[in-house]
Image (tube, rainbow, N blue to C red):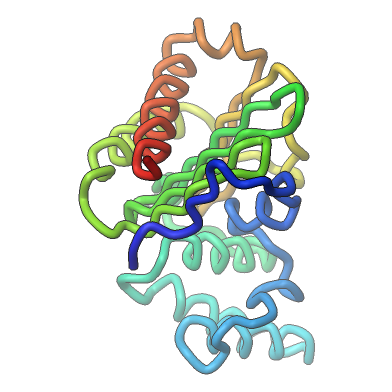
Amino acid sequence: MGLLGSLFGKKKEPASASIRDTLFADMPPELWPPPGAAADAFPWDAFAAARAHLAAGRRDEAVAGWRRIVDHPGLEPRHYLQAWHFLRQQGLQPPPATAKQVLGVVVEVGMPKGLDMLAAYPDHSARYYNFSGAGVVWEHPDTSLDAAIDALLAEAAHVVAQIGPWDKERPGPPQTGSVRLSFLTPSGLHFGQGGLDVISRDPKGGRLLQLATELMQAMIGKTK
């Protein structure tokens, strides 16, 4: 696939909450698969079948479907995250070898007029949504952003190794002037947040913010 959704220079509505939610891959069963998904192709068919099993009270069959997804190689990282989200809701945890694997990073900055969001995943896909509603969706048409994405994910892995997962519902967007650095793993959401000036001065937070900014600028450069 090529570079999709290059929206800079066009008047758009701000990114909706639903767009934000999809970045984290923790949707509720009734919304995943989403409407319009190709439910006859894997893993959509497995998600759809698991949802039906769960609704009918067949927990074991639903769990087996989600386990089939997490054990299947080569899928988009958000499918693994979503399946692990459902498994954790049923009281099942990933093995230690994979629990802290970083399958996504989401950086959110509260701006006076809205929210800036950058997301990157280990399949070298990325998304950037400006508070104005403009954005870039990068589906890895070439390797030009691989190094920038890998650097961000590697730095995130150092942080995740030192902190525990969040054990409550994912919080809403950060307030104006605040930054949230979210790390998506099979064991759940890990994150840190604070004022932009505080995060910028923090050795780890500042480095993550710098790498995220470099990736964002590179993505914007692809639209020119």
